Amino acid sequence: MTYSYFPGCTLKTKGKALDHWGRLSAQALGFPLEELPEWQCCGGVYPMAKDEIATRLSSVRALSNATDGKLVTLCSACYHVLKRVNNDIRTDETIRDRVNRYRADEAPYIGDTEVLHYLEVLRDEVGFAELSKKVVKPLTGRKIGAYYGCLLLRPSKELQFDDPENPHILEDFIRAIGAEPVVYGQRNECCGGYVTVENPGYAKSRAELILDNAASQGAECLITACPLCMYNLNKAGSLPVYYFTELLAEALGLKEGEA
Image (cartoon, rainbow, N blue to C red; front, top):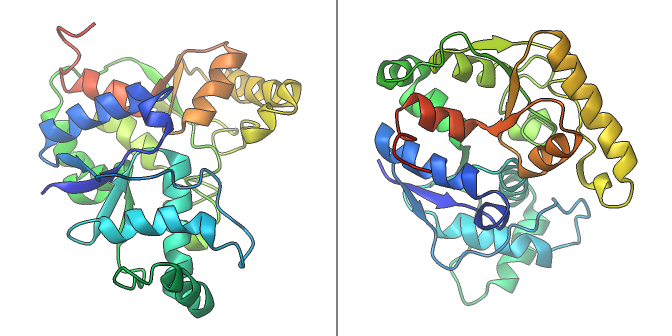
């Protein structure tokens, strides 16, 4: 099955590796990603104010343009914004009506697209057992820490991605590619997020706490799905950090021959 795909802005710039290896791996696993035409930024940050309608519109355009009722994304921030805006449209009549008045020249959107993170496709559509069968270069012996951050997990009632206090989807993924997951206490704590813009020292201290905690439990590297987390963790710099799609592509043998 081909899925409609929303890459988001960062995956066209700083987060190209997350996108590149994700697309190649999806093709190899039998679920090619078809980028939405003429997509716009999701907004970057979910608008908390209910009367903030304009910033929801680009997400709604993406959601309404998805084919077969499903929209896949790789970026944690895009997933967070798209899924929460979709929930607004589905559950809040006032927001839905105001959004559709802005879209008067288009068909009304009622929130019927299913927003999927790439990891959910691996878990629920492909299956981690099936993924493991397709691994040609298992990452045997490598001790990898999963870093979730905030945006995939919270608010849990809206996102319903995984248990916000004890997530395991990334650990299950690590096992599927043949490596050993390292569980550590800071894996679902904030890396500092956008505060890095105005208070980089605080963000650095948060990232260092995460990296030190992971290393103390034996992690040799971390994986993440979030470009902002990648930025903050790399800036702190005591452990290698990879996008999970990079290691997926490696395990599938797709990195051979590429620079």
